Image (cartoon, rainbow, N blue to C red; front, side, top):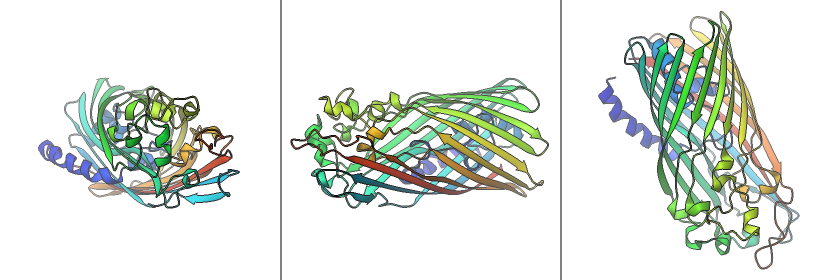
Length: 427
């Protein structure tokens, strides 16, 4: 494939991603990028394996290009994502205890695309197109109906990244990388009309259809081969600004919804001729995005929804530990596996609003494999995040509206299954 063909193909692939880019494991970020990394818990900061490497660490563009030799590498993949989300309300004065299913939409299909080519012995370039993350709920039975809401309740957030990258090798054992994170976001909310009385822009809070935003950020990366067996990697991504004007009465700062800053460190160790072990530690700074990190308690303190520094979903920063192993069983077959554990982003006191966004899973396991097939490579993975429930503690206030919310607690739950496949080849 020639570069001019690539420039024509990338926008088409990006358009194909837009309606299905909602995925979540670590909060509402994907647990990894590229089918190989997805099969090993997302480990990839120091362990770059395919043309999606720049989504995790743009310095890996150099390693992937080096492995491809004088040819380019192209990867195309597709994942099936099946989240199961639900909520309960207990001990509330305005209605009996009840359970609610948020699975109005049960299945999502998420494509991915990566392309890498060496420009010179020291310089490489690539392009990654992928779903960065998202969140979707749709409650046919509105959990907020007891407080005066009507209709179906839920939200849909989608984040698509188009990331051109460049990597430079100042020496044989080091690479530096830079990627531009072009972030396209879409958001819709419905069934939240009861909160209009607590918003600075009540006409821009719910049932406004789908709004979108476009922002630009940077990802920087470094990889160093410390010894023939050990590689170290660092990666940092800036905050990407975004704003949903049609929901200026819902999100703090007049509808502002940024992609949070995130960073990590990783190691990859060639433990034997056929074995590689890897580990990443990643931090996502959800608390630095007002719409996500500010507590709903600000509403009780007189700050309306949509106001400057207004209320939000109350998420904490998320730190994730990821561990992975890979075994080359034969010349044609490589097996991989991974596990991860994340801090809980949703505090027990913030579950009322997080009925809409129950990004509460903390652990997941994954299995993957790659088969060499003549001129190409077929890879697949299966990942599972066991169901996690955050039980509210003082999460439904007695105060507000005129008769209050009636106290009690909201409990939120999420479980996830992912299955994916990709094909990579040299051009």
